[in-house]
Amino acid sequence: MDGGTVSTEELKRLHTLYVDLRSENYDLSEKLKRKDTELNMLHHKVGKLEEMISSANGKEKWNAVNRGNIFICLSVDDLNELLLRKEIDVLKGKIDVQEEEFRLQQSTLMLELYNLTEQCQHYKEQLSSIQQPGAVCKDNQKKADHPYTVQEKEVNWNCVNGNSEIDQISPLSNHESVQAHMWELLEAKLDSVLEKDQVQFTDQQLQALRRVISDGLSLLPSNDLQHRSAERSVVHVSTQSDSQSFETKIEHLQAELAECNEKMNKLNSKLIEQDEQLVQKDNLLNDMSRLLESKIDSFEVEKEKFDTEIKHLKSDLDCLQEKHIEAQQNAVDSANQCTAWETQYAELQRLLEISEDELKRLKNFHVARQQSWEQEIENSATELSNEKEKSDQLQQQLTSVHRKHSDEISVLRKIADLKKQLRTETKRADLLQEKIVELLKDVGGSRADDMNELFSNLKGESGSSSSWSFLSGCNKESDKVSLACSDQESVHSSCIMSGSEMIELLERINSLKKGNYELQEKVQMLEEANSTIVEDLVAKNNTIEQLLRERHSSSSSVKGFLERMSAEWFDNDLRTMNKKLQRILEDTLKENLRLQKDVENLSAELARLSTAVPSLPAETTNVCKTKKLNTQKRIILVFS
Image 1 (spheres, one colour):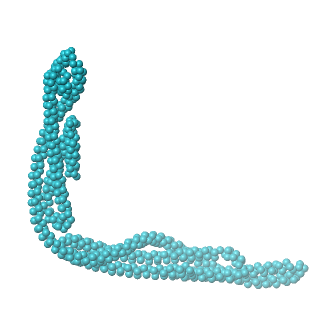
Image 2 (image 1 turned 45 degrees about the vertical axis):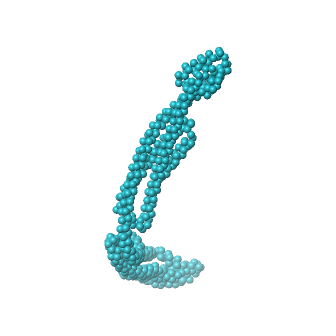
């Protein structure tokens, strides 16, 4: 009873849930359709707004509007596809609901069939127990004190269970024939049980009487034979009467038993047929259950798929709602942008008029400035040509200076050789003077002859290359020799010759010094010319930087922007001008490098000359070094 009631309640509950879900699905489908219509309307409005924007923007934004229209067309096609998909999903949901209904029906049928099989097995067990009378008799002997009450309770319980099971089976399976047979079986069972109980009860009473008689006979004495015979006759008569009554009853019961057995056989045959039918039905049910299980599995898989699709669709719905809100906001923003663009368009027209006027003014200014630049370029070209001529002249002067320096270096070398010879001759002269002093101390006649020989020897040696230096060394002490020596004329003549040679040498040294001073002045002139060239280059670089800064500063302002716009036609001329200026700078830098090398060579030669000629003043070398450093610094500044 409990299982049947629970199943019916669950069925009702599931049915109500199914109805609620169905109503909710239909409501959701209607809401989806409404929202789709609203989305279509909004897309239509957005298209109209974009057309208005395109008309406001004019010819400049025609391409952007065409792109927006293409995007709108594509979005409408996408919306149509989404609507078709949603309709398909609604149909799939309906199919899912129908499948769930079918599953519920199949589950209820399976439960009913399961209950029927259990009931059939129970009835089979009861029939097998009825067909074994010995077991029933043993149970009845054990329950001799209360046989009828227990059996009645069992029968009543079986009847109640049978009625409940039949009541459960009847609405579910509609097997009326099976119900009728089961009622007949129950009635036959009751009759057979009652008859068997009565027979067993009579057997028990007979056995009890026989036991009493045997006990009474054992108690009687052996002498009272008459009394025994009388009692035996009485007992015999009573037993005969009882046996006759019992035999009649037994015959009657046997007849009833035979009828009951016939009925039981008939019922057994019917039960066997019903069992066969039930087996067939069980097989069919098993086949059906297998098919249902396979279908249920497939349906569950499809249900999972549809659940996932429903979730995706819900997420798509949320996304579409968000897009709808964004589209509304974009429409409002686009309307605001249209107004802003209209105002900007008016301002731009006003600015265009102003810019056209400024362009005309700037064109005139540019033409005048270009003419001034052309004149400056011509002037710079002339200056470059002049500077080239100057550089050529300087190079020629440098070559001549180099030649003079080479001659002077050879002269200085000769002077160095002469100085060495002077030193050696001075030493020899000192030695000779010491000897002469020693000789002059002895003013005797014998020594006069020796002095004459010495002077004659000196005259003979004066033809050599170093005799004049010896005589020049003797010129210092000519007074002493004139006072001491008697032969003054010969000594005086030799001193005069050495003094003239020394004068010539001094004149030559003075001429060389003058030449060196002239060379130093020329070097100073060249350094000054190089410094002026470097200053000119620095000034030109500064002017170029100022021009570039003016260009950059003018480009930052509105006028600079308009000048840049107006100067687009003259960019090629400016580029060519810049290239020419760069070439001029490169040429001047190369010339400066050459001049620097020449100055370095001159400074090296001057250093050599200063080392070779120690009589040169140290100031000239210091001045040369400072000028060299200044030129190098200026050239480094130019390069930077």
